[in-house]
Every structure is written in structure tokens, then in C-alpha cells.
Length: 186
Image (cartoon, rainbow, N blue to C red; front, side, top):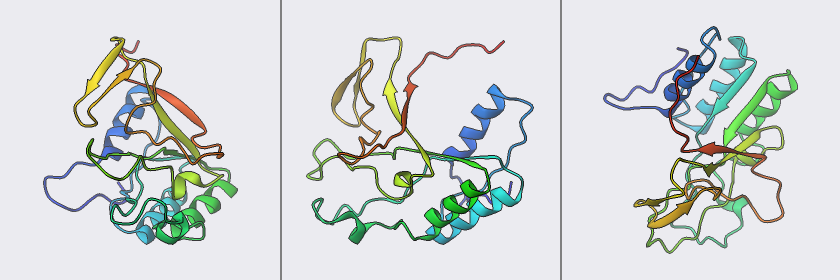
């Protein structure tokens, strides 16, 4: 544990990711550094994980696109994670050291009545050195009703929380299956 989120009674999905990795690869050496702070701290955390010997770094965090900003404003004017910012610089450094860097295609949580359209991938998930992963529903049911987004999601459809990417970009790099039934590992 290099750095944990300090607020009482909080959760951090990063620790949940480590639990999943431990289940799949129980012999793996794991390290954790929270990203729930500032962009400077996030970048320092990436470098701290590399210094601790990580050969794979995974995050599922991004800084929120300012909802009060017009969605047609150029992203470089509102991006809290500019290409030359501390997070992207740290990703470039560790990838150049031979470390693999994986990130989510953002958590696109918007209420159904929001006047802001879906948020495109922005910030460090656009970094060409980061492998960006989206989520596609593939559960046991042919579809499910998302109360959060007030939509029905069908098998094979992009999850409503997974950003679609910027038009004409190659992000996300891949999509992973979401909603699979739990199964025992043997």
C-alpha cells in the first residue's frame, strides 16, 4: 500500500481491481496507490508504482469534464488532464521504461435528463501510450434496464457508463465484456 485514500468510510474501486487481480493471479505481487487526489498526485503515484517494481499499471479514474462548460467547447480548453500534464507525462515515462499502462474509457455517469450529451473520452485515456478499455454488456440476460441512465442495454451494446471515444479517434483501444455471471475459478 503506497498511498491510500485518507477519508473515513470511503471506498476505492482501485482496491476492488486488486482483489479481482489477486483472484485471477494469486501469486502476483500487487501494489496500490490511490488516484483520488490531484492530477499532480496521480502522476506521482504512477511513478511511485513504477519505482516499486510494477510492470503493469491499471487505473479506472479520470477527472470530471466540467459539466457547466458548453459541450462544444474545445476539449483542450477544459481538460483537467492536458497532454503535457503530470498524468500524461508519467504515463509516457513509465511506458518508455517498458511498463504496460491500462486505463478505463471513463465512467460516463450522466443523469437521463442531463442537457450535456455523452462525454467523449478525454484526458489520459486519449494518451497513445495508454491502452484504453471500454465496456460492452454481455450478461446472462439478453438485456437489462439501467435505472441510472433510464435506458435498456442489450447484449453486445456499449455500456451507458463507457465513453464512446472522440469521432475519428482509435479510442477505446479494446472493449471488455461486462455483466458476466460469477463463476468459480479452478
